Image 1 (cartoon, rainbow, N blue to C red):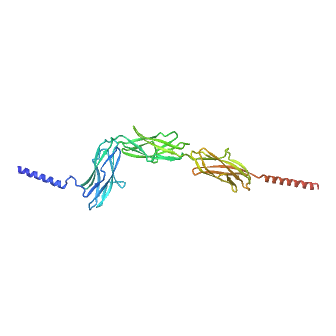
Image 2: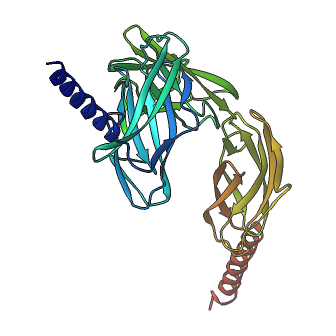
Image 3: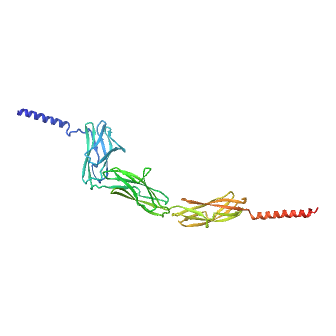
Length: 387
């Protein structure tokens, strides 16, 4: 009986040793394949995404094609495997070569402060190779959301539209519908957009983010300066705030007119007339290098006492004298002369209606001719009328 028991026990031990020698860890490793990353233990905050660059090394003489999975990933955590910007399911590595893949692990917003471990597993057939990771969560997770932008400060004229791009990130463990609002001052226009559509709210999945466009229009006649535009995204008791800045450099506008606003006059053919023009800066920014010019009928001439105004401050004006000379051949009637004032930013025109009168010399000549004709007729009647 004892001999029989020893025989059975020996068979069991030998069987166990054979199985152990064939598969010492229960699962055969992928031959000649190693997973490597230098930073296997990292610290992270709730809601953060951790990126690992993992090198898959094939030191064998044949191509290895592997699929990947994550074992032991805590509940609520998400991950994505990609290479060259594309999500992957499998990877082939040539003999005596290596490839790099990216492992992105997203920590949920609601997570306890602790150490968490998980394993990246590469499988080929019945074999697998693995790489273990440790993540230390530095603080207790809370229910938070973020509203951020890479460029919060923009500069432009008072008549410009300021366009910002902002990102809403939902760090919570559930979908949130964020209502969008602004506390900009009176007269400011704020429009929220997703793509080409105007929106007042936006839904964001847990641990995901969405971009929105914020279009801001300043009020009319706003002065130069820096203005803050508060923006809020709110989902229930969760709020995320962002302050945008618009730097107004001023508006550019001018008016070309006369001291009394009258845009008509008269002139004698072949003579000249002096007209006073008033250039007004009606904007909120300085105007520099203002050029004056005129468009006249054929053979008319104009001459300005100064062709350029070097600088004109907001609300100021300057009077320019222009001499208009009508053509000698101009006949009686109405003519149009257009004066222009222009700078790099803006321009203005004034259109004059000028009535041409014939010269008084021709009137005197006509009277003399008529007088001579009458005198001649009188002489003829006196001399030959009685015959």
